[in-house]
Amino acid sequence: MRYAIQTIGLSKTLTLEGRPLDVLRGVDFHANDGEFVSIIGPSGCGKSTLLNIIAGLDSPTSGVLSLHGRAGSARLGSVGYMQQKDLLMPWRSVLDNAVLGLEIQGVSRREAVSRASEHLGRFGLDGFEASYPHELSGGMRQRAAFLRTVLAGQDVFLLDEPFGALDALSRSQIHRWLTGLWESMNKTIVLVTHDVDEAILLSDRVYVMTARPGSMKTVQRIDIARPRSADMVTTPRFVDLKSALLTSIREDAHAHEIAV
Amino acid sequence: MSAEMSRRAAPSTKRRWIEAADERARRWLPALAIALGILAIWEALVWALDVQTWLLPAPSDIGIALYQDASLLWTHTRATLSEIVVGFGLALACGVGLAAAIGLSRTLERAIYPFVIASQTIPIIVIAPMLLIWVGYGLAPKVIVVALISFFPIVVNMVDGLKSVDRDMVSMMRTLGASRWQVFFKAQAPTSLPYLFSGARVAVAVSVIGAVIGEWVGSSEGLGYLMLRSKPQFLTERVFAAIAILSALGVGLFATVGAVERLAIPWWRATRGQRANEI
Ligand SMILES: Nc1ncnc2c1ncn2[C@@H]1O[C@H](COP(=O)(O)OP(=O)(O)OP(=O)(O)O)[C@@H](O)[C@H]1O
Ligand SMILES: [Mg+2]
Image (cartoon, rainbow over all chains, first blue to last red):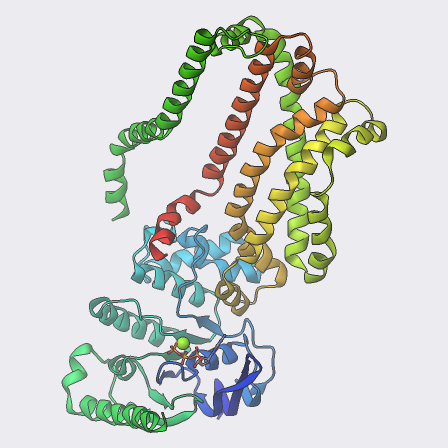
């Protein structure tokens, strides 16, 4: 079995003011082809650092990272990455922001616009293609940024807390929407989140990370049948999974307190 | 939803325009009041103290000179304006090119930036007469003086702009597979535009002084030349008329750059309020 993403013993040490800082230590992680995987961990444990390395923006200090079975350092451009900020360009309209990836790949303007137009409705941006980012709500900005990522056409997406800025209501809407999108696209998604409910509702598997230096502490398979909905948070299986995950997360917080 | 929005927007467009004009008038009102106040005091003092016109003309004398010498002043204004426009254009072209080179490469930055800064320590007054010998007597030496003075704020501001690009935005582009050039043209260059316009506004204001300095060193036309010629003739009101026109040129050119900025980067003003809130 070839994993879409696999890391073995991945470590990252930063040098801050001349002193080494272990951010990641021995991360063993994988995501199957077409799988939806979430990562939960305390703030500062190195989640964004891990995604940066997978995306190719950063390189590991040691360990192995392979994409679709190929190890190598030329990953930039082959992994879709949506960072915590939406990073829309204020001088571009929604449409022009969305086609940025296609433009970079050299796809003709007409072709890019037609591909983007196909998706606008599904991303809730119909009629807003000529609007500028500052005219959009937080949720619309996130969807526009996500459309940019999707249109670039990579088959692995890394999402770093993309729903942090949304309220609970638009969150549950976007959960349903994201699940639908993922099911129709057959892409691999790695989602970093602080929200345990969100992780369970969306994922096939959930990784829990330790505090810094971060590594994978537990991984939980979410064996709840799809389609899932927000009402399921009260079902016994959901409650079991949630308490297992919370226990795992708290253990770490506790250990951390003792260490401090 | 968007159709509904545009329907709502349509009838208010005209009203919004009037409101904007109103707002603009209100913005200029304080400056106008101060100018009128100063002119009134000036006029009163000249009359009360019976100051000779050749020593200090009253605003009314200057006004009369502006009216009576209109065609003469216009000829020289045109000469000065063309020096400013050509010199500023040259400064803009060279400034943007240098800033791009500095922004693209550390090595070029270290190689070029010291000379850019050193160029501002050149005593223009000393160099300008040599320019006459080097490039001749016509438009060229004035254009060079104007360009030499005004390219500096353009380069410095634009380099800052190119460097202020959001690093995360650059990362985002790289994950989309962008090359160094694509990052430069699609992220850095647009980010630098508001900075470029700030620099251009400073540059256009100092370019007026540049033109006058260029003319003082040697010329046969232009407002600076006219002032130089009128002073020994005790036509002080004409000197002041030329100063008034130069001031108006400066304000007008400054406003023109501002207007071009509003047209070229409308997103900048629209997002500025949000940024102020963030701070
Ligand atoms: N440029 C930097 N300067 C100082 N420390 C850094 C820098 N980059 C990363 N770190 C350190 O690396 C650690 C991991 O950072 P990272 O952003 O990956 O954490 P994270 O798990 O994504 O946190 P969060 O949940 O808050 O987003 C942090 O504890 C931080 O102290
Ligand atoms: Mg993070």
